[in-house]
Amino acid sequence: MTSRTPVPPEPAVTLREILAFDDSGTLRLLLAPAGQDVGVRAVAVGDEGPAQPLDGCLVLVVGAPAASAGAAGPVREAARRGASGVVLRDAEGEAAAPEVLAAAEESGIALLTRAAWADWTDTAALVRSALACARAGSGEEGAAVPDGGAESLAALAAAIAEYTGGAITIEDTRFRVLAHSATGPEADGLRRSTVLGGRVPEWRVAELRRSGMLRALWTSRDVIHRAADADGPERLVVAVRSGPEVLGSIWAAADGRSLSPWAADALRRAAEAAAPHLVRHRLRESGSARRSELALRGLLFGEGDARTHAWSLGLSPDAACAVVVAERDSGAPAGDRTLDVLALQAVSYRPSVRVLRDGDRLLVLLPVDTGRERDVLGLARELAALARSLPGRVPVRAGAGPVVPTALRARSSCEQAALIVRVLRERAARGGGAVRDGEGEADSARYADAAGVGPSLDVVRVLDAVRPVWESGSGPVHDLVRADLAAGGELVRSLAAYLDASGDVTRAAARLVVHPNTLRYRLRRARDRFGVDLDEPDTRLLITLAVRLTG
Image (cartoon, rainbow, N blue to C red; front, side):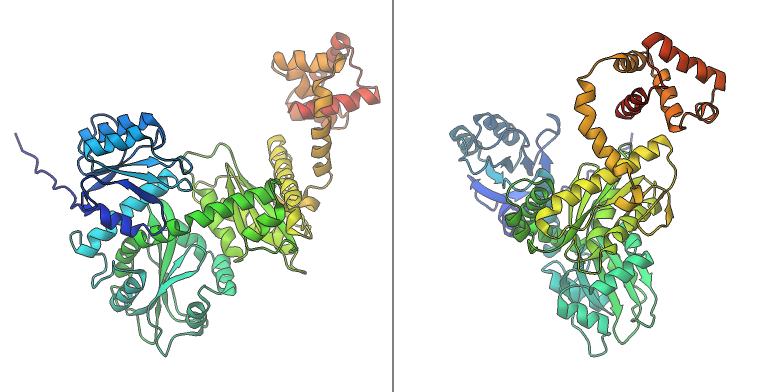
């Protein structure tokens, strides 16, 4: 019988170090009976099961908030199982319940709360990053890039430069420069403008997007090589990730000399070392990001004061804008990240773009300069094409809303873009084939603007308007539709095919894959059983509306 070598526990990090790492204000310490130097070895979720050991863990209690007396039980249970501390949800600034404070004091366990604007995913990422950063800095876990690389992003950039022999920039997903190494006298113009401007120039981001390099960067976990060309020297780039989420990227450019032979390996290790720093950077911005999300949602859905929302987003209320809606197929597999990649692509389109994730949709607010109105359809085309090129090819349909003269009317552009997506989706369900976009180009019904869907847009509006009238009505057509749908809908489908074929029985029968006489029999049955005469114009109109409203 062989014995298994025990795995040594992770080295502990003090609660004081975790709180020092949190410069975003995500965590608030309420009570530390054993002091702030108590050791924390890991983060755990409170509902992982009673058998889960919690020795040295900081436990996230996702249930009752700190203001609830019911949270006292989970606090005592976490202490009984060896936890160092617990994090409860802050109930909108309410004081912690006396019972909860007493439970922590008696158990000797640290008690913290999570800011109301943060979520549990943010909090877990923060604690894990703080643990990794503290261990790397102390040398207990071994820094991915030596010589103080864990102290700050600037120090990390300098260390990467030494190991790669290149000039380094560390950027977030909006291509803002978070840190960079020293710029040598032979640095190319692109690097100089990037460092001086604090972000990658818009023309450069557009070129990377067109070339497909951004798609490769956001979807690959390896180092990507870009050969030297007329625009600049050889470059290497790697995405920085926290699990599946992309946090940013690290670029190494040859700066008057060749990159070292081990530069790619150094970048891989550097991406691991940079992840905690970029998590902290993201959390630092979470409060303002969440406020921006609420402002964008209010602007696009007409909630609250539109002028205030626009200023909160850094937009002039009088700026012209348009909205692009990209909707993913609802049957996408679990864990699909297509919309995440599309969101990254959208924000790279222009620095002023704002993106809101709404279930299976992306809502993209695009400020539009005079003469650049075609950019709106261009962005819709780009998002639809990118989705088709990604692994899994999850269907995405994109609608380009009209340009409205002020941001205060963004809601109307958003509503029309959503209707265009709906038209595209319904056409696909009916096998409607290709449409034509605003430039007259044939397309496979993946994207369009109002000109691309033509009168179908008004038809959708009419159907929405008459739906309440239809649903409250009665008569022969209602009796036919309700009875037939209850029996499977064969007759309704036959009527729909007949009307779509403009009364051509042969063509409609071919679409239904039945003999023309079979279709004629069904049409007679509609007249004989329900008294529905398709030769009568008003009846045909009502039937047409009925079959469209019932799908």
